[in-house]
Image 1 (tube, one colour):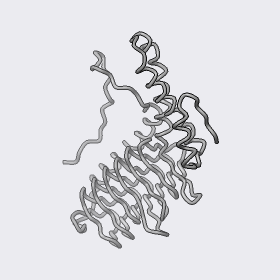
Image 2 (cartoon, one colour):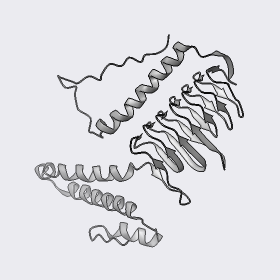
Image 3 (cartoon, helix red, strand yellow):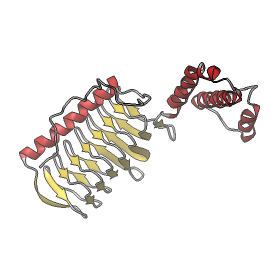
Image 4 (cartoon, helix red, strand yellow):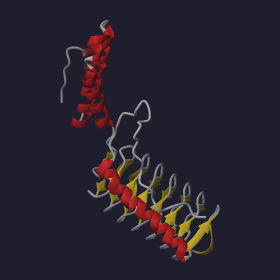
Length: 266
């Protein structure tokens, strides 16, 4: 696709000289970026501040267009495209590459990276992967987070299987071929070595991780309450989360977030 812009031919010529294959989505971003650069340059040449102020809506519109083009978190590789159920929520700053399958009602938080460029990654129904988690695996591996699996902030999963209703604590690392049993809890900052297995409802902690006892009914209920919060969060994000410009000061009648029943475990 060829693009010409009389006001800035140097940018266009640079793309032509590099023989870049510009796709449709890339073209939209380039066009918006050129428009913004040209507009900002023309603003600098103006001396009348009144003229500048009248153009504020236009520059905001261009910046919003660039933001939309840059925030796409999905990437195809080797003709394999991620799959995301319409009821799932994936934050725009998360990244999904290749053979990644996101099931019904799932939540993928800001900064999470799911790289299906060697092996497959599957999130089953109503599971969640929180902020800054990394999920990956070797060739031919299949990393699975089963139904209601709960992956805490900053955890790393590599070619493993997380059982149904299991919780992986914050900053934990689960290595290749490990299988975490249904309803188990992996304590925060644990390191689970490769091929580790644990029976259902195991409480595991340490580096390397060891089974210390069984998960109690009260602990499992606490975990399930937290997972339900993330199921609801996925719905909240789909219906009410929008990119915005921050306020300069706190408003007098500032709305409050709804109080939730799930609290830290004593």
